[in-house]
Figure (cartoon, rainbow, N blue to C red):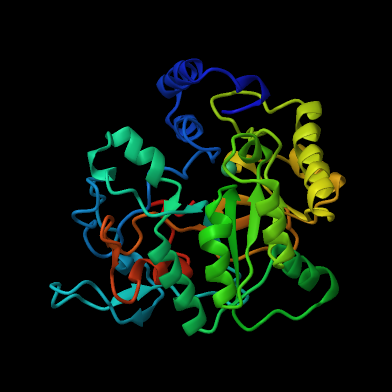
Amino acid sequence: MPGPARHRARPLAVTACLTVLAVVALVAGACAAYLTTPSHGPGQSGGSVALATPAPSGSGGQPSVGPTPFASFSTASAVPSSGPAGSPGASPTILPPIPPGAVPILYYHRAEAPPPDYPSWSKAKQAAFIDYDVLPVALAAQLDWLVANGYTTILPHDLVSHWNLGTPLPAKPVILTFDDGFHDWVTTILPMLQARGMVAEFYLTLTAIADGNITWSEVQTLASAGQGIGAHDVHHVQLAELGQGRPDASPATMWAEVNGARQTIFSHIGFYPDSMAYVGGGFSPELEAMVKQAGYTSARTIRRGIVQAADEPFELHVVRIGPYDDVTNLMAGTLRPGLPTFVARMHGVSDRPTGG
Ligand SMILES: [Zn+2]
């Protein structure tokens, strides 16, 4: 929803979003996000489903989401359930096998604990905060799980080098990605990564700089630390797959967003971003071609999946990690032992019921 012409007074933005809300729920996600932070579009809000166990209680009043049993997967390896205390008799969680060659790309935005007065906020304000968040304690536990289970972080260009040049990948590669741009990329996430010898791709939209959510100095800190800096548009505008018959952005707009972000990031950090994340997840053959022409070697969608295709480097799939995944109490920051939902995500169990 956001575009160059949308940088206007907030009441107008609210009005515009309300109008769009009435039209299509998918676009509503993007609008709601834009009201608070530069963020993504369809399918990224709404939180993640609580899998296998009921939705967390006492976690700020978010709506309960019905369980989606792993047992619906037919081919499976049994993984011991590690549900919360007080759920005796839980049957083993059945997970689909991880396909050979899987490279999960985890998809996050921001890591920030809700403030103490969060429970008193309106539902809308809570959703605007939490839908694009992960608790720092949850992120730390997820990163620890990756380490404990033998995963090694790589960057998108490592995957491309593997495909194009045969560069070996680690035995269990995983790509961590963070979208948009927030101060906590440096204050919270970077120290977590460094403590574990990890790297992540940070997909920066220049709107985040303009809005004061992150500074160039912070982006430079990430780059200097060896983290990946990807691009995510100049104005955080969805360029394709807008839905409801809405046309794609013009070629001129596509190029300005795709190439403009690349050139501006280069001018500030001294090297070109080699990967891009589509805003709102929307892409098209024309946009892919333009991304390639601009010089990127990969692009990330928000389509779900843990397997990447060598012949589709501009259609990388993601695993969406939700704000409630394995969280038993949002305010206390307590987690389900064993992170069963995160483990399921790593097996390709999607946060979307259709798996799309
Ligand atoms: Zn975004």
